[in-house]
Image (cartoon, rainbow, N blue to C red; front, side, top):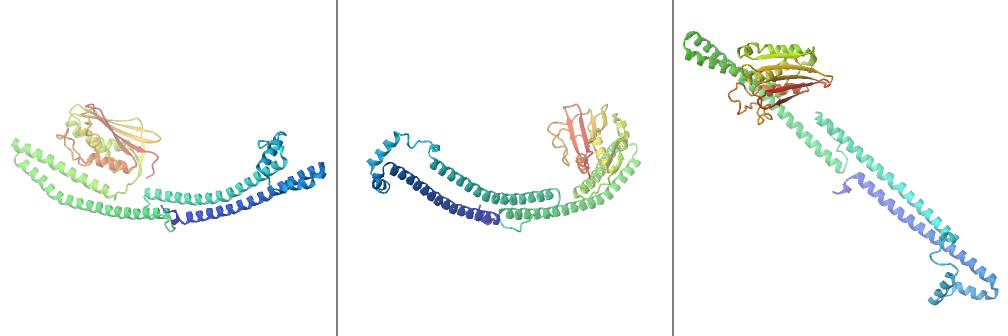
Length: 415
């Protein structure tokens, strides 16, 4: 990655280089100043030493001058070292015992500290300003991406500057534009599919109505022929199944196309559940099954009555189809400040473990229940309707002990 393509990083690097060069120049000035100061301290020390020797031995003035100006040999240096070490004057002597050296150290340490603080005070704000601007831009991008994820596909990231972040923004904008195009095409495809299914369904209704009429005529013409009556019963069942399939396909196509606008109003869920259950009374009576509704008190909920009725009817229908004579179906309602739970339980055959992760797929038919009627759309339709209300459906089943489908409708979701 080439950092120099980022204008902010380029400015930061140039500023740091200038600060380093300025620091290097300041270091040279400090080093020269320290050397001059050290020279002055050495000369002052030698003045005092020469004055002391001259006061003690005036007759040796010439030798004293020579001692400070003449070149010394190694043996003389060794002899001088031996002499002074006897008096405790050695390399390891404490700096506090040498006032001039101690003052020089303190002055030099103070200058180094000031230099370090000046350099730090110059570099840290530059780095801080760069990072603040950098992460501010990242936060802005993050906010825009969250808007896109929430559905604001028209949102675009600011990519007018230079650098890696601008390239990232441009890539995200390109991806968003492509996503917008794909969504538009998908909506068009769904609308086309919905229109196609609507047209096909309307075209099928006419021959289905004709076949139903022909079946009624044939039943009237041959009322005593048991074989013909049996075939007519089967024909009527299949015709009813086809009509239910067409109706469900139309509903599912409308949901998939995203053209459904829910009419959200406050409704009494108890009435909706009782209406859904009442539509199965005749069938339950014929098949010797019982259905009970348990609701401790009236539960109000903001929903689309017709679509919620459709979803609950499909769940009840699924329970009816997977129970046998003598089985029971129970519908219960639980109301909490967080959600409303509507459970449809049965003590029928239950759901095989191999099927439990696939039952909401459209047209899915279990290999363990091929003898059951159904289109494979009801649960898919129910799931789509409940999700449009902001809720979800859970399912539990253990062996042959029946199944429970629970609708969870949130109280806190704004639709």
